Length: 386
Image (tube, rainbow, N blue to C red; front, side, top):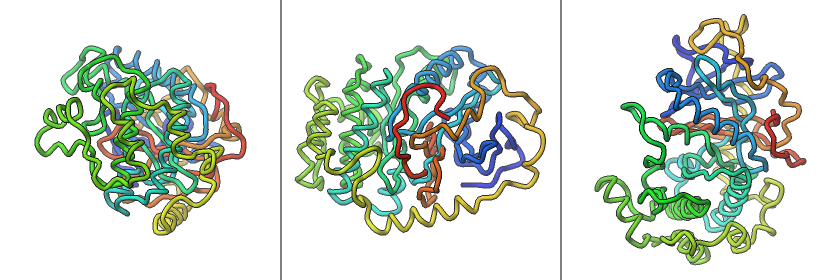
C-alpha cells in the first residue's frame, strides 16, 4: 500500500481514494471508501486502453459477466462505469495477502491440511464462476487471496478484456492469454477453452502451494520452453504430500476430458467436513499467518483519508467529472451480503476487517484483491450486490 502521488486522482465516481494498491497491465488499483464507509478496491483503466473501442467493448462485456458471479469465495464486482472517459470498476476489498506473497515470501510451502482446504475453497469459487458462464483462464497464486476464513478468487473475467490488445496495439481475440507456469495445455496450443482449463490451473496452484515450486519449472530457460513442458511433459510433483499428490496429478492431465470435475474435487478434498458458507469450519492457516492477518487488519482500520480528500468529486486525472451513465455507485454496501474482493500487494500483511470490503492487484498482475468476515447470508447473483 502506497500513498497517493501527485498524478493520482482523489476521487473516482463516488469513491474517495485512500492509497495506491498497485498497477498491472490494465491500469492502477486504489484502496478507496464509499460514501457509506465501505472499503473497496477501484481499478482505473489505462488511458491508452480506454481509447481503443475494441477494448472498451470487451471490458463492458466482462464487467457485465463478472457482476453475475455469486457465492462466498470470490471478490464481487460492486460498481463500475464502463462509459466514463477513463473506465473503472470497483470490487470488494479482501484484506489478505495473495497466495503468491504467502508462499513466495512470507511463509513458504503450506501444510497438507491447509492445501486441502485451499483446494476445496478454490473449487467452490470456480463452480460459482462457471455458473455465471465465465471461464477464469488465469487462476494463479497472485489471483488467490488468503483470509482467515478461507481463500478468495479475484480477477475472474475482467482481465480477459486485455485479450483484445497488446502493448503494440490491437490483436485478434483468441491470442495467447494467461500466465506462463499456470496455463493449461489447450491455452498453450490455442485450442478451445472450456471450464476444464481452470481445473488444470487449479492443479498447478495446489502444487505451488504445497511445494513452493511450479510443476513445470520456471521460465529461466525461456517462456517457450516452459510452454512446451506444459503441453508435452509430465509435471514434477516431487514434494507434494502423498495425500493430495494423486488429486493434483489428475488435475494436470493433458486431456481436458480426463480431468476431474469440480464436484469430484470437492469430494476428494472432504469439503463437506472442512468448509461451509465461505468459511473453513476450523482454523486452516499456520499460526504465523493468522498473526500476520491480524496485524494487517489493524493497519487497515487505521488508514485515514489523505489530506485534501474532502471536496468536490474529482475525475480520473483530477478533472471534475460526474459519474457516467451506468450503475450508480453505492446502491450499496448495506445490501452487499457476500464476501468481498481483495488485493494486497507484496509485503501487505492481511486480515479481515470487521465489515465486507473490496480488492487490489499485485504489481504486474491484472487483478483486484479483496477482507472482511464472510456474511452469514449467501449473496445471490445479480448486478446490484453493492
